[in-house]
Length: 220
Length: 364
Ligand code: HEM
Ligand code: SF4
Image (tube, rainbow over all chains, first blue to last red; front, side):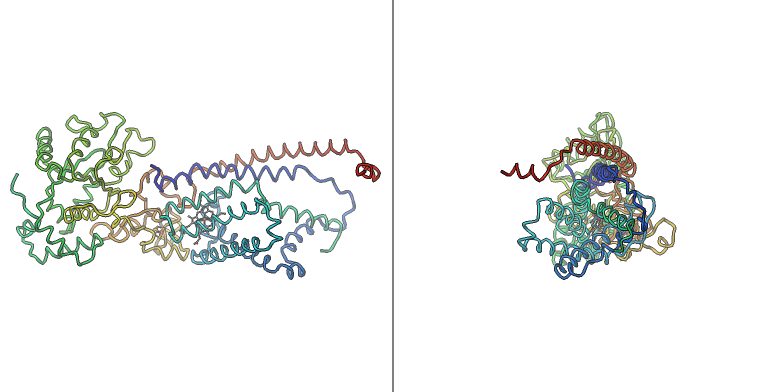
């Protein structure tokens, strides 16, 4: 009989190893696939710095532009909240930092659980609201693919199960924690092969655009 | 055998008055999580009931469970209970040995057929019957024989309840728990390495008083004692919530009594009553003396990763795996990248120019 402790040991042990292998392999593969394609060299005389342009765009594109904001303020605000929340919960909660410490050998400042808990609730709500928004608007719904929903689900589940584990809801803690870790493992496996890769490619693309502009001396 | 005395009779023989007796019943009720209204019922039952016959078998064990029970100093509930059951056989504590001991066991089984409580301490090796024997009899055979006519079985300690340390990987003796061998008898598991004495006493008191077993959870543990999570009852919990952790066993945080999560505390996944009942007559419990919980009352706690690794840290060497995966991914990535580049080159080479006339022609 598999008890919840056995289940927890299983997801903390062999399953995590497998998920890590797929996650890291997949990301490494996808990124190098893109990088190794290489661009044609640009022989034109530089009118500005690629580096400065690239770095500037990395940040400047994170600012909304006025007319877009007027058209879809809601998506932008909720989207920002949810991405920021996801970042805070994943990288600033102490149990999670311990995991990164194991991997990288160093750690950083974590937030009190109570704050993490509040951010979790806000993030969950932002994600829910965005889903409803997507479903209610006929155009958005038409444009949504199956993958959009898969990606939403695998991102939502770790947040939900983490919250449930902390609050001991539905299942006893060991089982809920096991489910939380399993949900993260699912996310890790799906990540490299879906649009979740935008986490990385977004910045590559921005940098590239900015660097090109920088090279040509375009002020953005 | 002498004429069976009731618990009340024995108490009065020992100079306890009725007040003491009722107090004892009150403690029993509290420990079992019952309302004060049932105290008279407990008193009544104990006054009338002859001493419950108990047979205690010790298999692959370290005697820690017995030690835990017998070390209570003051006349605690555990002591009272143990004075007032008829512990007909206890492998470790009895004076008799050899044939004589076997004789007593057989006699007790006969006198109380279908009525005695069987307490098992230790796991049962089924790899080879010779791994652990008593009077030339394998543990398994003895368990089967005694269990047959028992009213109920109490598996005391993590070994009897889940296999415990003998069962830890690679389980050289093929150790199993009581419930893996016996499926046709009521079984109560009181896990712990060792278990809290009052839990054992409480279950016995409940059985004697009500003639039934207490309410059990899915792991056959009495809910009264195992319904709580250490982390939820831990006095260091406010520090966990505030994010204040000891980073080592002797840093400032440790001295200030901060949470031991980072040092590998398994309190969050452990159900037991240590944080409230505590040990050594309520003196303290492991977390209070500065060491994280090991989760000793949970199944397979020995194989659940290092005691000093935080719960959120995976148990395997995932950093190394990540390294290999990174290299492998990079190699395949570059290879496909080059292939794609070649494809692009070939496509460019074989490119046929399409003029507006060609398109026109196709449309017609
Ligand atoms: C994308 C990755 C992850 C997300 C989004 C996530 C999300 C969360 C959330 C929302 C909470 C609850 C916070 C609260 O309400 O107080 C939480 C707690 C927790 N998570 Fe994660 N998590 C992730 C990865 C992981 C991983 C990989 C592990 C371990 C292998 C892990 C272990 C834990 C633990 C131990 C807790 C503490 C629960 C408690 O305080 O009782 N998480 N996580
Ligand atoms: S010391 Fe252990 S049980 Fe206590 S709050 Fe910290 S993690 Fe929880």
